[in-house]
Length: 339
Image 1 (tube, rainbow, N blue to C red):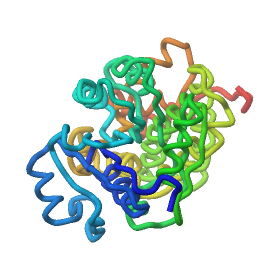
Image 2 (image 1 turned 30 degrees about the vertical axis):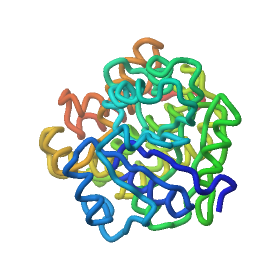
Image 3 (image 1 turned 45 degrees about the vertical axis):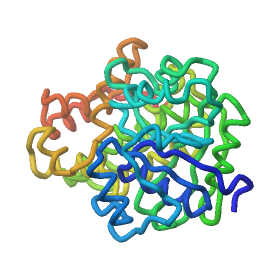
């Protein structure tokens, strides 16, 4: 067990990822309060002792309690881990702010993406809503919820400007087949976790059009270059993006069909329909669609050349077909790979 086993952790968000992280924390030996906004879902999860929608067959350990009462979820928690979609991240923090006032808690999130409305990174949202005095961390890396829930080997990073905060969350998770490394580059970790979803859509589109393994490899490599370009513009470090939260997550989500963003691209290329229709068919939030809207705005602000992102943006806004996007990319003038 970790050196801090037996702590009470509130996991805010009971989707696939929140449930998987809650299951792992419970296996380590922590008492987990798993919160969902839906009373009906809370009752079903608590009664059935598994998340049958997303993680069917993976049973909740006895030390997971599911609730839709946020006060109850946060009660006695020494650590709060937010695992909700990016578009409700701010609203969730606003709900918790008064309940956490005057308490000293460790605070982290495993949400990947930008805030859609402001195009802000999530640590910026957290600073605005919780105040600069609250130390925070972001947890990220190449992970699929199903594999984490089933106890398969996994490695992630805990990133915080405060070394003690990143170490706390590493100690909460680092156990058995799960390794949690520490990091200080919050921006780099967040950019990697968000941008890889855009590239997963791109590789899904490519494979859906049957463009071949050569094209997929080229997209991943050039996508990595775009990710580093964006990370540098926002203050991230190149070394971070070459690690688990950047390259590791990029390769995972671009090459395996467990990635909902990759599946979104595949389905959009193979069975053309509206973006909303494909998202509905997938049945989960497709963060890459939200991320590409935010990155388009950021790229404009910083005058960044991100051609793959640009074509994904055009596709999801119905400005062109996947085939037309490919033709546009291939028609670009030759240039140095260093550019």
